[in-house]
Length: 137
Image (cartoon, rainbow, N blue to C red; front, side, top):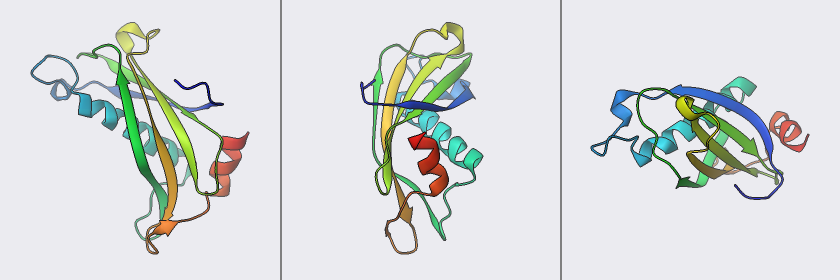
């Protein structure tokens, strides 16, 4: 995880489903991105700023993941979400994935840049004040 200033803002517990695994008997790499996506969306919903296709909301302009250890079924994944200093319309996120059967170990870490967008106008817009206050605190 980068040494940039970051703040823990949300933790999500997600069940590992049997179907999340692939032919190699571990969680498929694409599913890690789904775990991170669900964590971001849950945080936005909790804050009351979920994406509104007829209004404004977050979009991801990049995403990355580093896979350190294989996550396997059964269990849960704890995803910790951190945020960095906001810009006018964006902020960075970092996420850590830890399975319930080895909760002290980070199995994967990733991140994404979130940009707030006016979906109707098709362009970026100011971050909601609620997000800005949480991220800056």
